[in-house]
Length: 251
Ligand code: ZN
Image 1 (cartoon, rainbow, N blue to C red):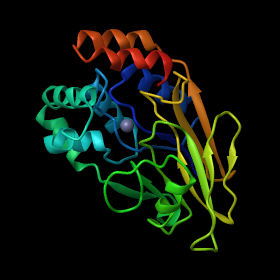
Image 2 (image 1 turned 45 degrees about the horizontal axis):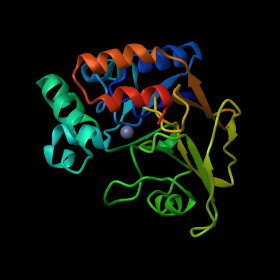
Image 3 (image 1 turned 90 degrees about the vertical axis):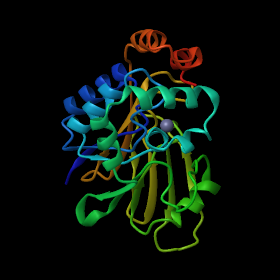
Image 4 (image 1 turned 45 degrees about the vertical axis):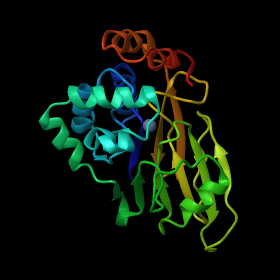
């Protein structure tokens, strides 16, 4: 049974993406799944789209891809995010626009399609952040399988609900590596690998995860990368200062 490398929210941060892909390949994962927001905020959208396209087996679209494809989505963003979305839209050429547009919003993978990949939440409706057990309860109603992988919050987390109860009590919350979380079979799971390129849990290291289907574990991995290289590139691109600064503190 396969070992999957899981990554999300790269946000145009090439040094963080390179460190993450190198790490996952050194760990000899069989497949790499990307949960969206490859672009937005960061200075290397084209390079990140190319690398994800080349190295990931499954990629879903995030809200920052939607904002590149549809300026109306970007109008709902805060000032720095909107400025970066507009800049990203002009930096990406037609080929990459078409690549992004071809990524689905949801993808099923793994044995019998038992692993659902989404960016924010499997629930239909507007974009939602799964920040706590209450919000996870709503998300569990959006899928029927044993496991949904999602990103969007930029904070690694795991939630579970008893598999046999449609309205069972959800528990879980943020998680830290490197201790693996055991995905026991009596539960359904929502797992978030955190963010590669813009972590928001006060740890500036890139975050990703390894899903080991034989061992039944989900393990958060944190990786040092060249933050200053990403900051310099953000400055050179003329992106808002805050976008480079926050990388140093992971917020
Ligand atoms: Zn994001």
